Length: 386
Image (cartoon, rainbow, N blue to C red):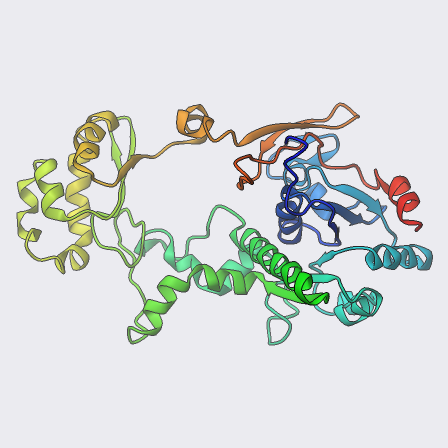
């Protein structure tokens, strides 16, 4: 970033006491916007995600997921059973702008670092908290883990074909969405502090984020006699949308076709067999499996490029389904400049993504990799007098 292009959160200090994905994802977004993130870790092992392996790849002794979500942060080792360390942490919190935590409900209170206690130390601090299921109710003490939250949220019944049973997302969507929601709340808290001078408590949970993700379809359900959606049993892509919405195999890959009138598609694909459905839009939903099966048979006879040459000029919403290698090699991806390389003094080199945000036309870039446990402890203690 040019020196005169100061990021919006430059000068703010975030003390991140969270682990795994949800809280660290929130602090990553704040860090990408210019905040200084000081990650609090146990001296004996640090953040548990250092050992959360997505593959057998280990870099510098830590998992790739830890590196991905903690790039450019600082690490302060704090033994929470040590009175002197806890006193030092409270001094740091008295000088911070934001604190983030995602302990199980009850733990942060036992540590004496709940919102009311921290507010007494620093009334201007914006306190962000993520749990699995909120602060009350029968699920509070259950593990706030992404797959389990997906299971309880109903979201799995939107994926896959009708005959498959529940299908989980292939990503930790509860963690990431909760982190993104908390980042929004923290930013709003900082804006409010700029007006009133007072901090605030911002809370969310994996469950709340997953419910919010479904707001569109849940609103339909709540106002449609609470009828459960029925997924297509053939190449399902959305429980509430009619044919041709789905992904179809071609000779050399897969073609996604979104909302498109059946008569127009029938003409372009030269499919007289779709004639029974042309003039009855209601049948595009009630007969969607049969329609999609017919379309799939036709798409299988050509290549992706052949179909795109016919459909795209006619303004049909369609796209080739790209795997990661195809995505990374595409001009559409490369022009976004979404990748960066971060390094560390112990010869750790990580190729990773960049911020999804552009500020004043520029995308923030960092060059520091995720920290070693307590890597910055000495410097932070000296700076803040801990």
